[in-house]
Length: 57
Image (cartoon, rainbow, N blue to C red; front, top):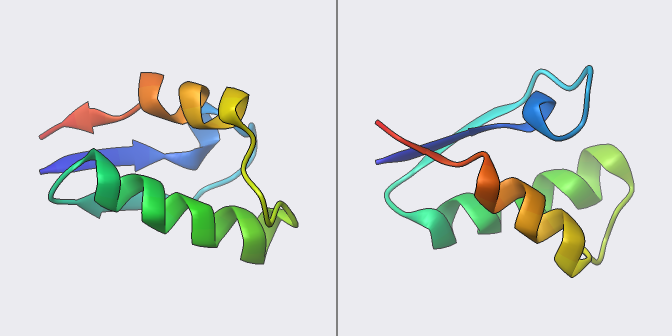
């Protein structure tokens, strides 16, 4: 199981995500980025930042 806290990358965001693997986290975060942050196409730099903050639980 993996977790990610959006606030680790976007200060002030309280969204948290859990998924079986990194791919699941990235899919959830992509939807969140589009819906809540107005970022429909997540740039590679943001994907890299998210990957650095995904944690195993």
